[in-house]
Length: 496
Ligand code: GDP
Image 1 (tube, rainbow, N blue to C red):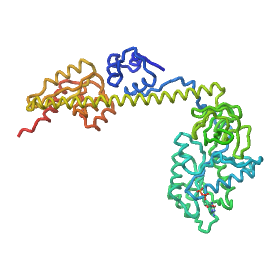
Image 2: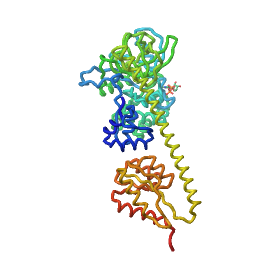
Image 3: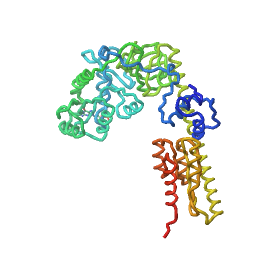
Image 4: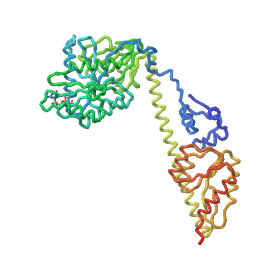
């Protein structure tokens, strides 16, 4: 995790002497060839040189999801996970309540329904569907923002008497950008004002390729109030899920996502949607930087279950700290492994925070340095103006070159140019590529940058344009001095 400056220079293919002077420009102080940097700092430096480094910081300590199965078709099917979305008052809650009731009616244990963030419906065929029961886009979105694409299918609810509304369109966009297939449920068809055809044409007008218009998005007419069409909806979900061929390994280390996390009278609980493997009491799991030894699993009926296979959600008891909704859950083979992963992640977080602080400190330091230079500059200009009110106009330059020798040569030859009216003045000169602080300094001091025999990084070019800093880029001294002459003559008072 650590590297010496000398080794880093070798890795980047930069001469050590040059590298050390460039580190100075980047704001590092008292750097010698045997100075030691952390992997993170070295990575930042490497980025300055156009590399895209990855820091290998003891990855083995962490837990990661397994690679996908080699032969996915050999893996069993799992229940689809479905989210209901749509405009406010179009019936999301009513549909979920209806589905939940049917799940309890079919439930063998007589528990008390509780909200855990998801519930499963058992079909007469024995097949199962898992519904996320936090309606609305906020939950869907916040999970997605955290990289958790937990939903396999979106049910888009549109009220037959109200048709497509702003949140309907938003839901369509979310489903599309998450690449989650949709089924349309046209709800409230029991109402007199229901106008199914209008809903269909409005959907088509909003780019939903529904069946009746030659597309493949299924449309089901339902009523959450009377229950009409609800069987069809469930059948359609299963049909689509068969087409999607949703499969997962029921064995191996479990993986899933935290749907919700809360404190209940029985203790700290979090609902986990299992995506692979099977969770059981006694398992060791990690979610974000939180450890749990699974004490018990309970379903949405509040009934303790012995296992949670893929595609089901259970409330888990046994957390040390509350995990966050959207955190990925990973099972560890042993308690030690789980705990060292948590330890690693906590340290990693601390390292990141420390890095942020250092970067911020370096930025502030550089800012102060530039302010100081600008103030000095202003003072110098003022003094000179006082000293020689009729003296030549001084034009500022910064000289950068590949090596020390060329910087000296360039500086010497441009200082020979000039006359009584206008003369060049070199404010800064150093070997190495143009840096951000060179451009910032040039912008403040109104300097033209001379770049001799050096590549210029793309972001530096853009930064120079943005800051209206001119760069003269040459590798032949003669051409360079010609252009410097031209710059000087542009600054001459026009002769009439
Ligand atoms: P949400 O905001 O999308 O969750 O909508 P709700 O489920 O809260 O429903 C809004 C209103 O529409 C409530 O007054 C429901 O009783 C009513 N509603 C929902 N579904 C139906 C239906 O199929 N038919 C009728 N007539 N009313 C419904």
